[in-house]
Image 1 (cartoon, rainbow, N blue to C red):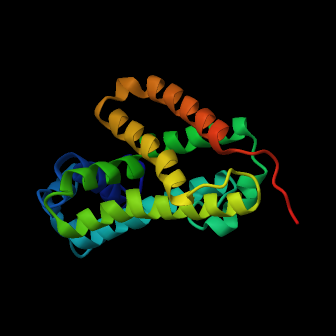
Image 2 (image 1 turned 90 degrees about the vertical axis):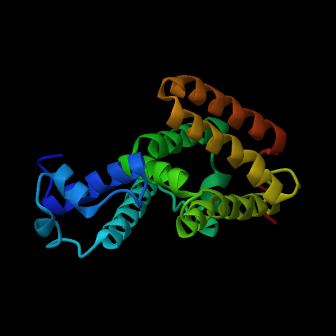
Length: 212
């Protein structure tokens, strides 16, 4: 990390400290000390702690988009991704699920941000709302719309797409939170994740899409 530009090091250390202690308890001075600079030097890069936090969120979103690009998918717009999932085999879906799980678990910004919001959800209403949007509303909306379109394409069994999204996503989120608390359970979690995707596919997948 010492080879990173100072501005990048500020974000990395802030992300780590926010995840460990929560947003409110971390001071700008503490972030500066972790970076190895004085607070006045930090203010040359960011005017206050809120600006640092906003930059951390932006950095996390940037890394997520970069990871999605590597996987050749959008990850936020289900209309863009539906054809990608129509062509996907069960084994490819399993590998995709494991890759995404690894990203959210091991990417420093993604993991730290999730831990920060977990800490702050009962203390800060704004961050609680962000937690709900980031880890419930957005993924359930994306997957619900995706399943709806896959049902229309004949790739998945007719069912309630929002309930399907809940059934698919909730166990994955649960496994992530378990690994946050118990890193030694990652291997078991990945095995469970694989079994979960196979079973979900068996329950709902019909076969190749039918186009009229």
